[in-house]
Image (tube, rainbow, N blue to C red; front, side, top):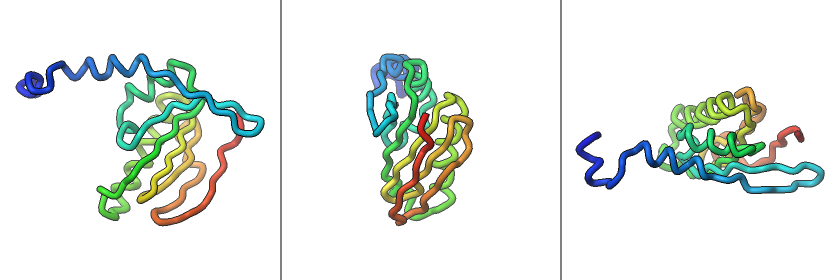
Length: 130
């Protein structure tokens, strides 16, 4: 990858360093207050971003994804949910994944899958209040 650094203009470790400045978004839902760490699509695969939100006192990681590029491959969609479980176990934060063309899921802060809605399923799942 070293030859590509000249094309990119900066080393890849600077991208991870920039994620340290991320700040969670406050959100009140009923009687519960959350500090949301938003992760868009494949940012769920980036441990530094999830870790930065955890270090900034986020209380919930939320991932919105369009998994259409998996072309209906359920095994690949399941791996994406597994990434959410890994981020939850790493950070100790619950993870909510909302995917319009793949599996949506709620995962607790230990990485345990609490609820899962398969592709093309419309529904609601609830995360226990903190």
